[in-house]
Image (cartoon, rainbow, N blue to C red; front, side):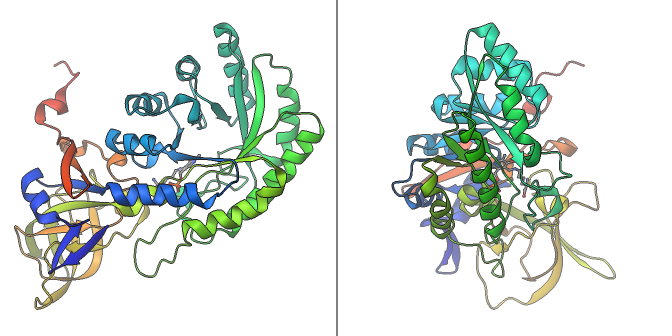
Length: 413
Ligand code: LLP
């Protein structure tokens, strides 16, 4: 994990300034240990309950991270053919993959069936019909769950809340039963589960338990009607602490409470955590380029921008700013930390009380392991950053920084 030792920020004993100097900035750094600890917390908390932890690849799909998790025995939750390609390249087992998402194409469905993906989480009858057709053509039977929309408020940022009736996600839980019955007409489909996911960065998991209760009630009705449902998939969504005031529940406690609800049903449980596995296992390192004062504000201009980490601009998300050298003697000022991109919305922190770090010095943006690099773009023709993995007391670059040639690859003038 990330902490100060002798006033220098390190990751599991490896000095971050050394990484910043050698790998360059901006640069994401991840702790292998933190990722594996969080995965194992999930896995162990289920105890003897049959379960599968399917890491949500969208949170961070870097091969080295997928490979760490695959070796630890993780399953994967994917939402595109591209994510499946990554999971396979990282050595993941396709039979331990669930394919979620609102709009899978025929090409993606065919790719998934060809590779032997374990289960489709489907969100519409139109998509079920397409999966049936593709499976039929390939002489296969596809296992599916319907992702139901339980109409439960996850109490989180509106952009990442998904479980209310007017969201585009899932099939209304009231009509799902009829859809399962109609789906019996599809010869190449087998209904094997019910899934739901109500949102992300959830700090009070009572709504997830409420959704689980509704899902279990639906399963027992389906089973009574003779459908071979053998698992529930309760999605991801557990929040993390982005700042001291956030008090997320411990993974163990969340899973113990969830397991207690499910035990009696005899069902296998799946969860799809993303952020709670990688979020606090990563930081984004950046270098201060300039300081500048306007009549009303002071700006710290750094070499990372909204294209590298979009969460502050998009969700007004808070990421802690940690100077790599802790210097308690420095004066402090209230500043905006901004990047070089040509948008007023390009900021990493607003009105933050920080020590007066000078050009040439480095800072880390905390909790950047989830939805950081994966949401990075080449806006302003900025090469995407390098990524580093710290493992067993050493570090290595697991994705090199993009070059100018990478920026124009595939284009013709
Ligand atoms: N399963 C499904 C079906 C999902 O849609 C998601 C996230 C997850 C699992 C994983 O959720 P997690 O455990 O990571 O909360 N870009 C946003 C987050 C979007 C989440 C989308 N779905 C952010 O930066 O906060």
